[in-house]
Image 1 (cartoon, rainbow, N blue to C red):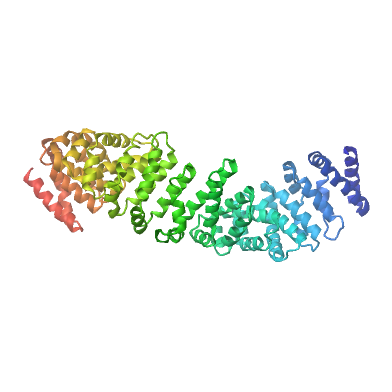
Image 2 (cartoon, helix red, strand yellow; image 1 turned 60 degrees about the horizontal axis):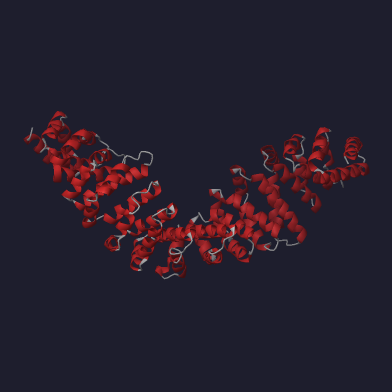
Amino acid sequence: MADNLSDALKKLKLASVDSATDSVESCLDCLLKALAHNNADASEKIQEMGVLPLLPTLLAPQSSCTPKVANIIADVAKNEFMRSPCVEAGLIPPLVQLLHSKDQEVLLQTGRALGNICYDSHEGRSAVDLAGGAQIVAGHIKSLSQNTDPDNGKLLTVFCGMLMNYSNDNDSLQAQLINMGVIPTLVKLLGLHSDNTALTEMCLIAFGNLAELESSKEQFASTNIAEELVRLFQRQAEHEKKEMIFEVLAPLAENDVIKLQLVEAGLVECLLDVVAQTVDGVREEDVAQLKTASDLMVLLLLGDESMQKLFEGGKGSVFQRVLSWVPSHNHQLQLAGALAIANFARNDGNCIHMVESGIVQKLLDLLDRHVEEGNVTVQHAALSALRNLAIPVVNKAKMLSAGVSDTVLKFLPSEMPPVQFKLLGTLRMLIDTQADAADQLGTNGKLVERLVEWCEAKDHAGVMGESNRLLSALIRHSKSKDVVKTVIQGAGVKHLVLMATSEHMIMQNEALVALGLIAGLDLVGAEKDFVGAGLVQVLHKLLSDEMSAPEVKYNSMIIICAVMGSVPLHKEVQGLAFIDVVSKLRSHENKTVSHQASLTEQRLTAQS
């Protein structure tokens, strides 16, 4: 075979000069045979003998050799090491010209050749882009899309594959295809050629690539992609095919308009069926499908309209079925069920209905199953759901009497920052306006000790911020001397002083209100910590800073007045010339600030 190939290549070099068609044809046949026998070796030989630069002249539109030459290029370009040489040999411009041919075989082999040269090749893609090949192929797909003839299906598959190889993992080329209007054409193809497995798969892969691009979502939303994908999904029995459709659905479902379209097209029912079929499965593919289907279900609930449509006032069958996932024995379903509740709990009406219908107990039971050696993602999801449910004021007392805070406190020993973060957020939501609960939790030495520890979690800004906010909230909502004492004993005061310097105004204010209560309820107990943490210096800075919010200035002055009863703090106030800063605030545009400035000035003058 090797000798025959060498002879054929030599003859081809001579024949291409003489343009002797018959001898060229037989040489081409010999090359195709050699490539079919051992593609890599034959390709290397073709490269070594310098045959590639001869091929452009053999790609004449009228020549009977043309389909074979394009076929040889397509086969050669299956090898990664041959793609750049094909570009360097000047094969792209004549191949792109052949896309104007009316001959089906020429188009087929040309599409293959260009597609293979573009595969994972920057040079190939650039050359096709420069020659305008993608536009011509996109035009062909559009004009051929209505024709359901089997040969036409093969050509469409090759052309779709060529565009996919051309644009894969390349944002700018994908954007180019989107601007050419490729998406509506491919969606039509999917509908008209759903019986053609190869073409359908090619469309799905193309959608998967294009759907990653944000700019594609609007075009997809203007087509009936949701209906087509759901219809296709309903017809699939094989795991691999369903998986391919899932890979397109996931990026598309990130768009809220498409979420709603998918819900209306009946995707949710498909997903619930998949869950029902795979929940007890032990095969790897069952586990994978269960995860993908339940994750996608949760994703659909992230859209406000799609979520509300599925909630149906809390009576929706989908809502009820998702609730049944929470007590499941399957961790993936427990997780998806808890996340779904967290997503349904995004407005007060839904939250109130869910608490009334007994969902809290299901979540508490779930958490109890995950206290010891529990699944962190399930813990995180269940705590997220409880936090959201605790937002409406009417739910707080009900949730507290159901024992939510006791269950949540079981996770205090957790070393997982995501769990710590949600635990803190849930407790903070629960005690908002609930004085008794704030008092009970605020005098819990173990809780306060853990909060102070987390206030120093510099590697986890979220946990650190939430710990500070909860510490402040315990004082603000309880207004209790016992809570203040517990915080002082737990060394929490310095963290609240530091919190007052936060870049977030809401946190500054929460800290200042708590510090004001500490000063008012137990100044003697807190005096040493106030001095050590530099409270007076922080207040001076906040009052001097023009950027400080009116509430921050007001609360800072309240604290100044409150600390005047302490000798060391009074001295610090006098040493920093507060009177100058405060007197300027008498003319502040905010009436509350200017009034408080007058009162504070009187207090400072009287005690100077």
